[in-house]
Length: 238
Image (cartoon, rainbow, N blue to C red; front, side, top):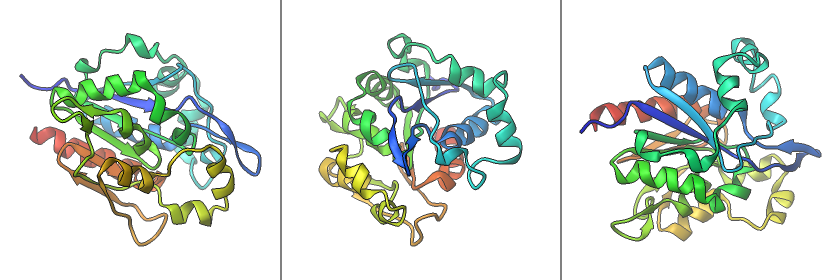
């Protein structure tokens, strides 16, 4: 039976002061870029967060990351993307078996709630169990501790190669101290804990993604579009 031509993008509900006191939260382009890629390919796309809420990441709203047509889409509360984002359904009402793709968008705040987001974990696990793709970008890979392969009882990334935001990047942004105060592992640390191999691009902000079977991961906001495009290529071969 073919997989549903539907994708669900997870969104962090967490927020915390980070960028000189400005909030981290959902990095807008990390949800918008895959949303655009999937809808352009004819997928029905939904968005969901653990608590049904989100806070936009301050940095993600700056011109370097959000400009032109994408900025217009974000600022138009009646755009299809904003309507989906501002009216996310309760996480418990989502049936993961209705989707062929799970894509974890992020923002630094995902480090806080994704490892403990049982509702999101169930959706992703259901997508995985029926043969779908469980993908993530930047800090979205913090979802994988709770996405368990029923056949092994281990995280779906055990024995896989993944990427995600670099520890060097945290230092370069001068935000390691507040991030460490959250008491949660970074992405390369999660990979080690879960038995995955972590790889990264040479440059912190290089567009870079990794495909390992039905696990597709990207490094940073610049990689969100290419990661989603790689997801589609894998999907079409399933």
